[in-house]
Length: 138
Ligand code: THU
Image (tube, rainbow, N blue to C red; front, side, top):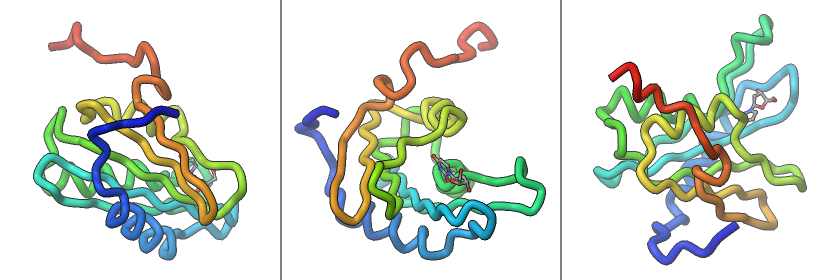
């Protein structure tokens, strides 16, 4: 956890994440997740987890939100903040795959984890140190 003097206004991001979580399709795990992303254009994109009877097809909330942001024009470096919300006592950091997906588009990326009672703030580089960059492909 860290204090970020450049933190955005988390309120609209939290609202968007909770709203999206309300639409989560999680009939198998019963674990509903909401995510919201702030981009350099000032736009907010939200996502929820979308499970499937074929379990591995499941999409996490974070990558749902990221897909919406990219479809609207998000470019690498343009991802400024992320929020992940659940209603369980233990806060839910993004899974490994979602961390890697977020890093691809992140500048300095504060990641706020929240439930109805508490919040913790993290940096994406702390959540995923030594991420794979694919730099040698470019
Ligand atoms: N899930 C997310 O949406 N985001 C995460 O970061 C962790 C897990 C979802 C996937 C699945 O629908 C449910 O939570 C249980 O794993």
